Amino acid sequence: MHAKDLTTDVLIRLTGDALLMFYSCAEHFHAEACQGSAMAVSGEPVADLNYLMLDSGDSAALAAFSRYVGWCDERELPFACMVAPDASEAAAPVCEQLGLVYATDWPLMVCPGEAAADFQVQGVEIRKMQSEDDYNGMVEVMASAYQMPATSVRRAMPLRLIQSPSLDIYLAERDGKILSTVTVTRHGEVIGVWAMGTHVDAQGQKIGKALLSRVMFGARQAGATAFFLGATPAGFPLYQRLGYETLYTAKVWVRGETHQA
Image 1 (cartoon, helix red, strand yellow):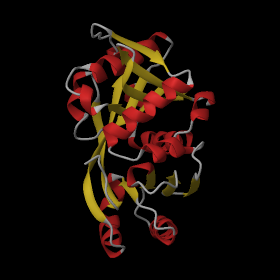
Image 2 (tube, one colour):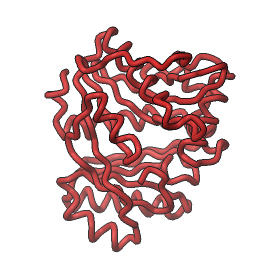
Image 3 (cartoon, one colour):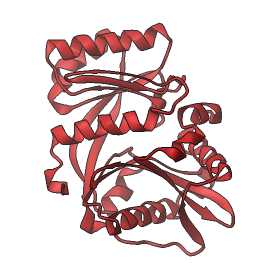
């Protein structure tokens, strides 16, 4: 499958699959789905670690979505909801009625495999997470980059993620300190890019660019034909420079506070 084959419908399915991979090891993982609506949550009290998806505006999908919101509210669980363009008009009054707050647009972007190129920063080593020390460094970066408690990161992304057959975590290190991290999910020849973050003390030094470009280049060498990701406003310019283009833009509604707006 190439980037031109990643239609909106395909990308929605891949995004849902990736969220299941990403949170399946979480200590309080829970997921439900029906045609047009889905929920995949880590169970942590952090909106950016719990996701609802709505890609249809029909009555059955909206009813399921409302049930998922109720399930989270019963547990006082904050969350972010991604609403696909085809569902936006029907979803807006439902989200407002449920007391959700519109937070931001979320561009879903794709990149052809041939655009992957190796970009290096002197002194920065890129490698796959392999040890508990690596894991501890990744947790520190995630907590810093996304302003969330390290304890929540540990429960949502436990050490056993290393054993996942369809997911890898990569690190950028300089002078023995882990400064940036990215997680990739594998969907055949298509690669999903998730949880891209750089420690606040190392931002603006092109370390994240070196990390993602090297990971993409390695995946391309291994046979990847396309990449996809959801872009935060902070990451959007970098992804554009690396060859990503917006396929569609979801609306993000939240219960709680998000640091991705």
